[in-house]
Length: 640
Ligand code: FEO
Ligand code: CA
Ligand code: CA
Ligand code: CA
Image 1 (cartoon, rainbow, N blue to C red):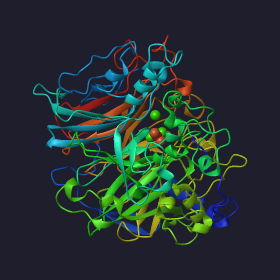
Image 2: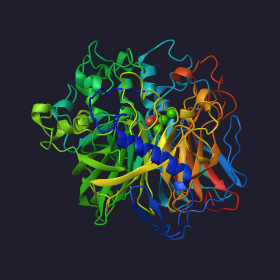
Image 3: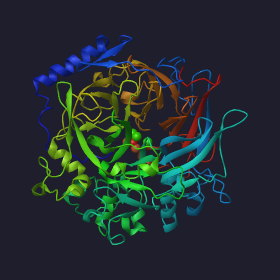
Image 4: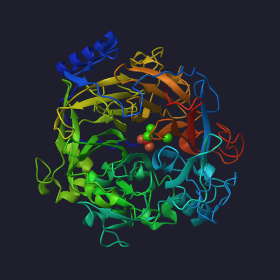
């Protein structure tokens, strides 16, 4: 996991700060005393003094009540859901997406060609969203394919290497759009062929828009104007807009580039060269991924990409106004006057949480009326002060330290170098911010901070109020409430929960979870009735050992955030991450992604023993990331 922040900012959170110590102690004590417990029906006291007024769930949906029976701890190589629910595999790596006349069958030995892979589901499903075609009965799923396990992707893994293998790896990345429908006999099916079926890969032409479009740092030999990029990759979590488009977020893009022998300060700050060579070996046959030859190609990744899932001919757009980061995900909401606010985590150790506020209000008329809405606005980075208050620091060229003298020639450079800008502004270095979510009932915002085992190590940042544990193997969920509308510059924050197993041997790993224990929170969504769903991503090598000895496989839990009690809804197969939750508008169908079942240490499976850690979902052949569809036997709302 990337760990590139060597900036000296800020001093406000030092361990020696007595105010911080008091706050942290008080925070934990308050949690133990029931701060996370049942709250008054009319609203709840949010730390920081805010009263969160209760709002009604969306029309036709029940309130926050959670009614299912918790799934007990088990170590099984399958998806387990509570009694009364069904989980069925819908869309696996290698399944044809459904382009008419071009639907190659999956070859369980990894033998599909690159051209076939470009017509099939990619690997390692991550963020996802359901876009209705016919309400809750038929729709499109946009699905991220974050990265690949080359040990499974090719018959002999990386033992031999070729341009064809690079092409296949590129084709297994990106996004797919598939049509899904409720089947007449119950359950769900892929609609194939479908005129909407589409693969976007790390080779698909896309446009660059916003203040950094055309910037000198984005210009390359192949694209001297810096406005047209081939592809998106490392597509982790997602966002979705009020005008019906999908956002895919480029996270660990640094792993795809061959670094120079001596990376410069900018490249180092963005994690280039932290691995020797390139993990994916694309540069051996695709020179643009060799940063020794084409240094600016690296700056063309790390963006949010907007995709219109309803138009298979549409050109995806990299939205630079939202800033460059190892983007995890994006949670959108609107101000009272209709502007859009985008909350974004940057998942790397000691990186930041961002917020973008659009200049313009969302217009009626779908994407056609909002094509440039994400190109104009203000980007902010979060500082979490030790007293439970926080502020949003603007990344605006010419303001404060963001001047030419400090290495920011223009607004575009501030966005390309958002990390360096945030360092100078004194943003808070977080424990790997993953997904963000906005509670539609209270407008509180949540972010999963998945873990950070290097917090407090010699030479690395120590604990602070927002990131209060050294050797943080378990993670936490932080929340904040803006002072007024969502465009506010200040907020009050607290922790919803510090994750961990209360029985863990190491006191620092125990946390304060009420209900079912978990660690490494990652995927996060608050559904339309206000139920929070937390998905976990402890690495395969951590699961069942050390601080995780008493915890099960990765899981999905439900929580009423006004009560704070966690209840396990789903257990995943061995070695998987659970992620990507989305639902039909009526919340009677959930779609969840099971990513990298059987993940081996080092992220590379042995092609001679592909089922060593998991044989899910087929029971033989190679383990396959897949979308799972969850329904309730009585047809009811999931989780009630
Ligand atoms: Fe791709 Fe931070 O998870
Ligand atoms: Ca994630
Ligand atoms: Ca993760
Ligand atoms: Ca993962």
